[in-house]
Length: 287
Image (cartoon, rainbow, N blue to C red):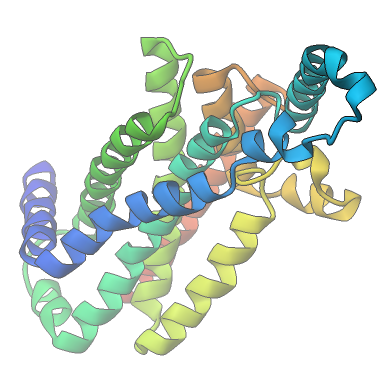
């Protein structure tokens, strides 16, 4: 089966490289997220003393440097209280690494729907390759794409001012956490893709899953700033625990128990993978 998985994975990668438009747009997307969204929402600037510039009366002008210092300390304290750090861009970058992997996982299912409509999936089913190798190759191929784009995203973030405080072990553990999240959702979206024949329905399902999970997690804003009911919802969200693990390893920040976050992430990933494999093989075995 290893040989079949390798051949089918190489097939997936060649299709990816051959679609130049998709390839280029996927490279531009990280730049748009971080360069536009990340830099436009600049909380450091919002809380800077210049934002609260005072028009001091002449009698207080001699105390201007002291007032400026007090305002600087207050702004730094506010940022730390909100995000755990004074660098919101780094906070956002770690969350975007998780979100981008999550969104890219969905394309595995979308590609299956298009392959079914174009007939290439039927030709693949007619080969003697084990059915599980088809399922597994799509996971491996999508995972390679994800980490390619994650590398691009990280390079862009570093160029724009991302300041990680990470060791080699922390970097590896962050990658493992992202991989676990991706494997679970790639499997789930594969299962959906094999059972859906219409791309409009597929995109509707993706929007129904992707957006609520993104906003009901601390990838963009801290968990403690959410309403109490949304914090309870976020406890069932795998993005919450993945983002927490990545932030702990890259920035030293976390809001949930580290060991508990790993246990929940591994459990959710295993459950999603099993569900996705069952839903996919149920369709593949019928051909």
